[in-house]
Length: 269
Length: 351
Image (cartoon, rainbow over all chains, first blue to last red; front, side, top):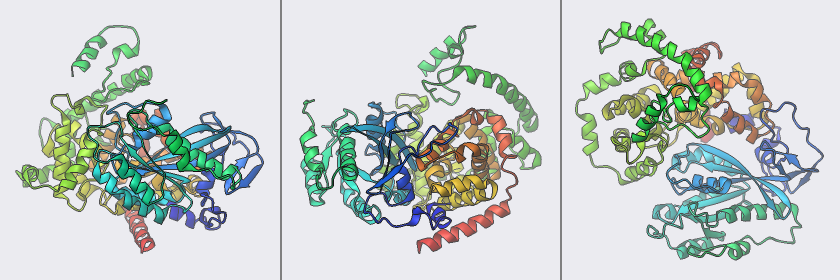
């Protein structure tokens, strides 16, 4: 049974109903992702009954904080997918963000899809990011595509030491336009920025490409931690602003990133 | 290797804690994780060693030193109870037909290595070399012999031999296990060939149709055998691919404990891919109450990870007995029929 199958047996459910609000929450899966309180201790007994739920911009908010399975309180949840060619450092970036660690040579290639949670405090709002790590190899895309459309945000990575991964960004963007929700928050990241000697993609090349496609951009390093926290925080801020704040008070992702971003070799903290 | 010896000699001391007695590295070269439970491992092994010894004696009597085996009911029963590690390579080779291929094609493997290779294939394989079992001492770049080079060769030969598949992530782990067990590149290559061209459907080809089909087939089997779990999956709109693609692609490597995986592979090489469904169905059936409690899609993902890590799967001997009982009957005819139906459904949906 695949999603298609599941949807088939569940035609009337929210699973196949089109998004009417224009929010990133287009399917039941995404709604579940955006349902705080839905996730609880897997070994637990009785399910928490959902407290009064308020629908705002398609993202579901409880009237009071809920507990996730890691016993962390959160107010709102979003689904973030990390994509990009094989070996660009998606899992490393994720582990750096989640655990603040980088253990060189301790990672194995990701097969299929994996996921991790992290709760962030964004302007007083507890935001839970469900981060989906994907296999980079092309043939796995048919497996991951199905989940593109549920993503609220996509972090698209290339490796500054690998020209091919940079050249493939256009193809990735095409796929994203085809499969992801049109309102998806997208950010381009040039990873492994610490590898000065092996660098083949200039920072300006990344900037130019990002500008051409109107996508926020920065360079990151899972090894040094450069801009890793910022990448996730920035998308969390954007998503939170979109769903909680007054839409007229627009959060400017690129401006925020430019202000907060550190560049390689800069030790500003 | 040095590290291992040091640990072993320390392990000789009497008394103390289990963590002082048990190697930091398992018999296959995998370093045990920091949170490895030495106490329960020791308790488990004290029972399993009795079984292993008994099986080893039985196998020695059966084989009587000969290198040829005939497939029959008795051998099948023996395989299901576990092949002693010293005979694994021999039985896998014989029962999968890999030995026959090897003998029929002398020099073929070597010729594949010296052929002109597609640079893209080379690059894709290289990307994964350092990312294949970094926690196994035989795959460390500094170890001697280092299995990384052998891994590269087997994957390259395999990709060249089977150009429609080339290299697919997941194959690195499979080739790695084959090398650990056979300690022989050529045998590993032919076992890989047995898996890709005879035992498994087309899991690894670019369209991954066989994988998609088997994921659907599993869904259908769950619907028949564990309907409430199927309903839970439908309610939360979870695609099977999300939770089981790794199970199939990696043939349970890095999903289940090493010893359990090898016991599964004993049956996989002898009986075929049906065993993969038996394992999946057992995991799901055994944990159905837990899965049904899931409240969301991430919950389900979490539970599907959790069920591959509890003591139920550590106790490999009991687990292997369970897979032939717990899911009930599963005939090859049913499987063939379901595969055909699901396959045409997928093809129809695509067009």
